[in-house]
Image (cartoon, rainbow, N blue to C red):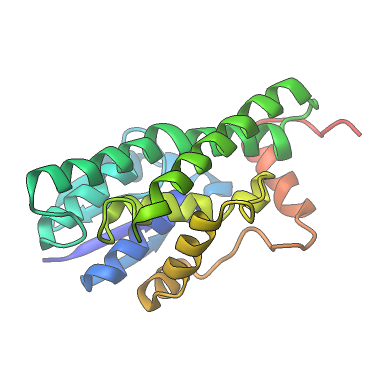
Length: 228
């Protein structure tokens, strides 16, 4: 069985490389250049009609959408998803909260905070407020358990890949002690460290000058120069 991961250095892309490393599954990597629009090529659209990374080809079976890929890999391997019915449901509930909540809200906060040509304080405040609220939910959930569904699962991988970038978004996680502990615990896992190097290209330099990356992303999104 051969798995090919089509990915790029994005939170959703890292979800899958981390999961593959955690599961110990053999896989090949095809890094797509989003700036060149390779995710919109006819060949890739056959795998993912939505034209976004990540996607996998598992021995000829295509799976798109990061949440669906995580479930597919967990079920395929019998790992990272509890077998007991209620525990499994809890893990899936928290996975869905990331897919439908934290990811989209952080994505919009990043869009309006870094890329949108106009400064829209009210819009940015709305999305940052939602990010803070959702991270607060995670903090409350983690107050009496090490991981979101009790044991380490795909729900933790999904949230981690976004929550670790909260500082770039504009949200400080240091006032959230349980989230901070959880982030540090997951970041220390060898498989996570390996997965974050697939592909080994970091688009954002923490604390550095990201102006070139931001300008390139604005161009990719079809947005003009940002107002001063």
